[in-house]
Image (cartoon, rainbow, N blue to C red; front, side, top):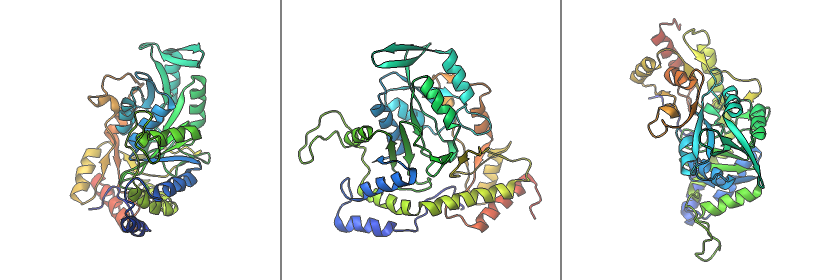
Length: 385
């Protein structure tokens, strides 16, 4: 089987994990957590980083520390992994779903601006100006863009929208480690950015997340809350309701070893994507996600569009090639189906019905890529000799 996207462990993972086992520092104490936080900070260009158990928790805690109150709204794209919407609910908020654009597959900023201009009002009080949703009369507190598949939208325009409507930004950058917009790293445009180190990501800890913060006070608050809000280093005293959301040392050890290989992983992802683009560029039945010249994507999960992805998926499965459809849009999931959905032509549904992600592990070989391309052409009846 050629897998979709699996970890590539070719560095100091064994050595660092053995160090944890030899010393007994396998839990929340130990040096590797801090070293991993520093390594990610250097990659993204942010000094304030907080490791946690996964990206979902990172999004939740960013919203809570950022000041989301119960029942307030967070604007998210309709086409995303379910963790984005779930994190808003866990933080006590209520998502408003915005459709994505047909070319770049990111939150449609035209729809977003039209919605904010026509369906909101603003109130000024002693805390400043806030934007409220006309229907619910609840504050819209956050804008949460998702860098879908590692690509990025127009971050300049998005930042201007957020400023105009007094919205804080939490970037769901869980798929975008290594992606930049005009040279600035994903996750560093907003008040918070969140990364994931799940097994299918560009670097992995097996499971893990990282929050990057502009404000050092926010980072300190995050560290405090994810450690059960412990207020004394030696005594079991706590000053508020906290969480056990810390990343453990042994997983951070894997993460540090992976971070040391990040540049080579990123280069390989780009090579894989380019190989697919070149190999499939003349296949008229297939199209790709557009890339803005302002964006340098990490090419995390290479995905194509075609009319019959289910048929191709079944065919490739029989050939020992794993593929994956995109996520079911949030408005089609039972627990999120009653959320307000701002849409034009429901591009989320169109992409869901036509998209298929191809094998792109860092460790995939050139011969495997050629084999996948050949089998795709065989299914489509294209001469690939």
